[in-house]
Image (cartoon, rainbow, N blue to C red; front, side):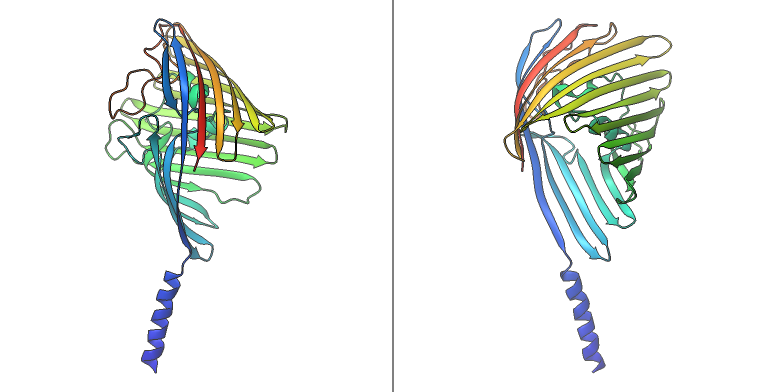
Amino acid sequence: MKKSLLALAVLGAFTGVASAQSSVTLFGTIDLNGRYVKNDGSNARYSLSQDGINSSQLGFKGVEDLGGGLKAGFLLLAGVNADNGSANAQFWNRSAYARLMGNFGEVRLGRDYTPTFWNDTIFDAFGTNGLGDSTQVKQIAAPDFVRANNAVGYFLPSGIGGVYGQVMVAAAEGVVATGRYTGGRVGFAAGPIDVAGAYSQEKLAAGTYTTYNIGGAYDFGVAKLMGYWNRETITTTTDNVYAVSTVVPIGQGEIHAAYDYGKATNGAFSNKITKIALGYVYNLSKRTALYTTVSQLSNGSLSASSLGSVGVSTVGSGSSGSATAAPTLGGKSQGAEFGLRHFF
C-alpha cells in the first residue's frame, strides 16, 4: 500500500511539471525604405535602406509559469538586413537573455540594452531610427552605449506608485574593446508624464567612460512633447547632446518633428553639430505603416558627420552605406526617405 501511494505521489509530481504553462512566440519587424542622401563635397546616393522608424529584426521569446507568481523566460533577438537578406556577424546582436520574473521584479542574464540608452531612445520621437535619429549628433560614444554583453540586470516590479527602474553590471571578460559596465536608471510615469534619469561607468584601458542623462515626456493629447540631455565623458573630452522632439497624432497618422544639438569639448577644441528632422507616419493597420522623413545635419568646423552610414556594399557585408562619402569638414548632410514598416 505504501509503495502504491509513493508511486502515485511521484506520478503526480511529474504530471505537475508537465502541465506547467509555457509558450514560445516567433515575431519580428521588417522596415525598408527608398533613401536619398547628399553630403557636401560628394555625389548623392539613392539606396534601398532600412530601419526608418523601427529596427528590422527576428525574435523568439518564451515564458513558463512556475506557479506562485514566479515565471521564467527568454528573449533571442537578431537584427535583419532586410534590404539584401544578410545576417550580422553577431547573430543575436540585439538581445539574448534568460529572465526570472516575480513579485520581487525581474532578473535578466545575457546581452541587453544598457540603462543609459533607454532615455535616448524612448524620449526621441524617431526612436533613434532612420534619418531622424537624435544620436547622429553625438561625437563620442562608449563601446557599450546601446547594449552590453555578459550582463546581469535587475528591474523593479511594477505597481509601486509609478516608480520604475533598473540596474546592470556587465563583465568585460578580457575583451579589450569593451570594459566593465555598471549603470542604473530610475523614473516615474503616471498619466501624461514620464521622466527618468540614468548613470553609468565603463572601465576602459584609456580611462573611465562616464555617461549620465535625464529625459522626459508629457502627453498633451493633441501632441506629445519629449526630450533628453545626455552627457558623456572620457578623460578630458566631454560630449553633450540636447534633443527636443514631438509626435502629433492626426487621424490614422502622426507627424514627427525634432531638433538635436551636440557639442563636444576638451582643452584643445570645441565643436557643434545640429540636426532638424520632420517625418510623417500613416498607419494602414496596427501592424503596417507607410512613412517618410526628411532631415538635415549641419557640422561644425571640426566634424564630418553624415546622416545614415557611409560606404559601399559588398556581398555578405550587410546594408550598404546611405552616403557615398562623408561630407567635407563643416559641411552639411541632407536626406529623405520613404518606406514601409510591418510587424509580424
